[in-house]
Image (cartoon, protein in one colour):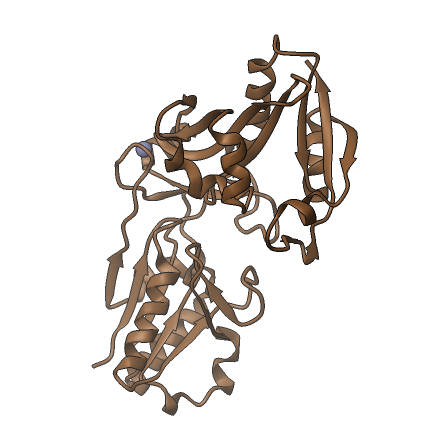
Length: 330
Ligand SMILES: [Zn+2]
């Protein structure tokens, strides 16, 4: 007898990666698994499921189930199953019971306010097998709740589903979710073992050679969130003696929380007595970020990215050419 499975976990518990691996395992055995998701979620582009770790796979929409010839499939996998409607879960139950095709659903249990999603509610009620995919809070306890984070703060009010918003989600244990406590932040000067931060620094500056040019002589600061490296920056001294902020980076998974601005403010405090102005060089895409923090355009280093990098750097579909320098009075 086929079964209906509900595998639930909090944000970041690798549900989608898990779903893609199960589909792969079916294919390895010469069988076919149909990947589906509810149409509501368009975050990964058209007809694709994608995980935070970068894995992705083509899929169809649950809404298209009636058009799909199920005789070609040995299993159905549903990602983002929390967004299913009651009728859609019922439809999946019918497929399991009447066509004897197993259906494995992956999804969140509760929303950012701690309420069950509609899909999760009916899957909890009707699934044959319910399994938890575990992940941990920054404190080390099991993370069971999903906090919505905006501007670095946990928010408790708003719509259940926001598409295309600038909020992000963090898995927390129930206690820290209830208190709205994100990982405690600490900016720490890193004097020894700077090279351990190279993978993170390469995210903001793709040239190891360029980083080597300012990392040893500069001061490296790491932003630690609950002990994990969430971001970094380097403060260097320019030829004219003025301080310059280099390689400001926030690690994937920690973005959208205001950590970049937090690091810049920290840099301004650190450099308060080191000169008249703090400089920063960046690409066009990041100018608005610095202007919001009170920086003004200073000058442009023409063709900087073309002349100093071995390979072209593509940002937002365009080859980077000029470095734009901004500064702020200290
Ligand atoms: Zn916790």
